[in-house]
Amino acid sequence: MIITSADADIGAARRATSEFVAHSGATASVDDVVLVVSELVTNAVRHTVGWWRLKVQVRSRGLVVDVEDSSWVPPALRRPGSDAVGGRGWGIVQHLADDVEVFENSGGKTVRASWGRSQPR
Figure 1 (tube, one colour):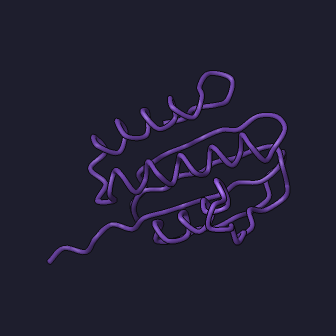
Figure 2: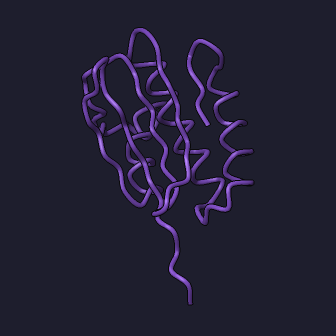
């Protein structure tokens, strides 16, 4: 599944992700994945100028969420005050995903969150 800033907003990204994950056969929690997508896309909207692209896919090793945007500046953990509205998203992403990576691409950066497949018992 691929969604871009040209054809969707944050709410549409959440809804499409929920639908995709629910029917994908992935073992990751739909709620966890949707919250991670919400945080990553929101960060792309708030902290970059230009486009963003969301790609959610099931691979042999699990579920992968890529959010690409037009900035080369990596996400950073902030310490919000107790009454602050923002500043918690990057910590949420790191807590909910099994693995998080950030790497440069040709037009900015990609933030990748992934969840592995559970092993058969």
